[in-house]
Length: 337
Image (tube, rainbow, N blue to C red; front, side, top):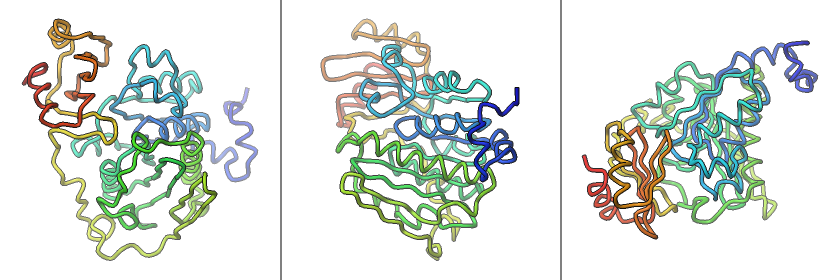
């Protein structure tokens, strides 16, 4: 049996062939965010034979994810599996010949460069601009291509950005330039997610097989409901861009925030700034709440509105409020220092 038999239909394509497949097998990709975009991207890249796929996501699988996050099942919801773990398990069943690494953690200034170690392309599966600017700055600092994508409502946007060859993300979208709309506030259609993620995967594959001349040189936008499409052709980078021109990398200088509001989810994330032991926390919360403990997290339902989810890396999600004061109070009362 030919070692590339699995990829026989891909080998027939002149742009890939056996030489291109060899390149894919020896490639390493980091996918940050294993939700709607990330699961579709991971599915395509694993089936294409990318040799190592590193998954990073801070969240766990919920029922509302199943409408568009293609690697997850109802069983994952029942088991409260972190998205990175559930995706890794699914990818193992898709292609056992590749290596899949899963990290259940937040991507921060402190860990991003380590997560990128040895990586050929970083692919954006996130849902917020703060993390995208962080990925953009880290990629352009380290000289690693950044495959950007975003999907919300019926709209999609994507671009393949290469340090030294193209402008960076900041040249198109200024920090703070987001409309504030997210999947949690205005929804998203599943086919839109597939369209954006497939474009991201396609541009990534082109680059990995050595066909950079085939990469699209534009920021592609579309609205699939209104049948609108527009490509913003790459021009010269902005002369004052703090990332790709003056090389200040502002997002890499931002210090870790103590708490982060997760837009539209009625959830606040608080960092304990240290690892947490789940067993004693579960024992403590069991006296006052309905809890469920897994090897990856403890979830405690405090009342009909409020739930606390504790991760061993020191992150605590307070669900059911957007009041920072209330979130701090819950953290101090039930988790403490």
